[in-house]
Length: 171
Length: 171
Image (cartoon, each protein chain N blue to C red):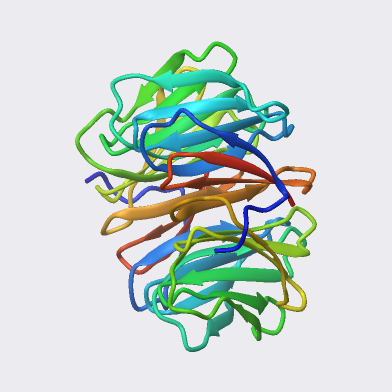
C-alpha cells in the first residue's frame, strides 16, 4: 500500500457496515450512500456533514439513485422493496413492490416522474414516483429481469434478462 | 403471468447467456448490453440491428457503460479487467488493470477522458480513457472499494468501501 493520497478531501463516517453504492446529486451538492447497515445517508458534498439518514424497515441496501431534480432518492434493499425518499425531509414517500420477490435494479425516468423496476419474477413494472402507484406491468421476459434503463428522451425502456434477451419497450 | 405487453417494441437476440447490464447511448441511438457470455453487444436502438459484438479474452461481463460522447464503452468482467472499446469500429482500445484482483465498478468522468476503477485491493485508480495510461492511484480505503462515481463537474470522485466509509477525492 502506498501512503494515503493527498487528493483525499474527506472521509465520511457513520455507516456501520460495508457501503455498496454512492452517487452525487445532479447538482453536485449532495452525496447519497447505500449500506448493508440498512440505511441510505445523504451528505453535504461541500463539508461532509450528514444531512439525512434514511432508515425504515429495511434490510441491507445495495443501490441508491437520485432523481434528475435531486429531490428524491430511490433505494433497493435485500427485502425486495424499492423505497422512494424525500431528500429534503428524509421521509419515506413510498414503498414500491413490498413483496418477497427480489428486485435487481431500478431506474428513474429522465424527468423523475416514473421509476422502472426489474424483478426476479420476469416482470418490469413502471411506477409513478410521486404517488407510488403502479402504472404499467410489462410482461414478456421468460426469466428474471436483471437491469433496466430509460432512453435519454424517456420514451423507451431497455431491459435485460436471464432469458438471454434484450427487450425494448414503449415507456 | 399476464399476456405479453403491447408496449414491447423489440426483442434483441444473440446473447448466449444471461444479460446483466444495459444502457442507451447518451444520444439514444444505440444500446449496449453486457452478458455472462463474455461479450458486450452494441445494437441500433431504432431497428434492433446488431452493430458490434465486442469480444476478446473475456470472462463473464457484468457491467458496461458508455462515455458521454457515446464513442467509447467500458466493460467490467469477472477476470478483473476493465476494457475500453471503440464503439464505431468494435475494436478493443485498452485493457486496464489486467490483474487477478477484482474490479467492482468503473465510471467515466463526465468529459469521457478518464475512467475511475474501484478495486478489491482497496485502491482507486484513475486512467486516461484514450491512452489506457494509469494517471493516479488513490490510497486510503482500508478494505475493498465497492463503487465510485465522479461529480457532475468532474472535479471530484466519491468512493465507498467495505471499510464502512465514504471518501471524497480530488479527481
